[in-house]
Image (cartoon, rainbow, N blue to C red; front, side, top):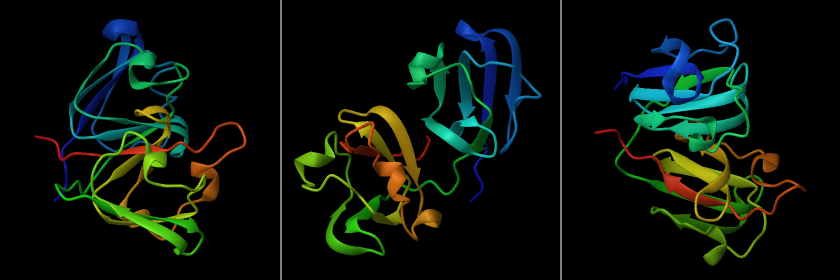
Length: 181
């Protein structure tokens, strides 16, 4: 089922200044606004990216108001592409693996976990298989830091650099993305 979505990008904080309304995926937003300091999501679930062509830091936004880039855990006022999250499900199930190609130790879960290291003893996740739903992994416990969206269509594996880097510990937490009401 195709989801209807609508998102507004505002150049200034608190929904002020020039704005751009978007209702579909957009790989390049810089022609519509120079900076983004607030966002209003009126329909659907969206992932916004700091670079064009769905690259760079990503932020998953549900219906609601985000009066400043800090309110969506942004690192700057730069948003350059966005896409509507499709195929949301009320069921959630994922398997993560310690090694590439779905090998090594594995854990399966279907609920939110504020701190993955409470149940996962390894520091890296090298592959993941999304069985149901959409998943967001976070850089730090308690849903903080960079976000990494994993979808069923991308279940062939996880690029190790997504969930591991030398700059931060892989204290990934996750949350299932709920189906919008």
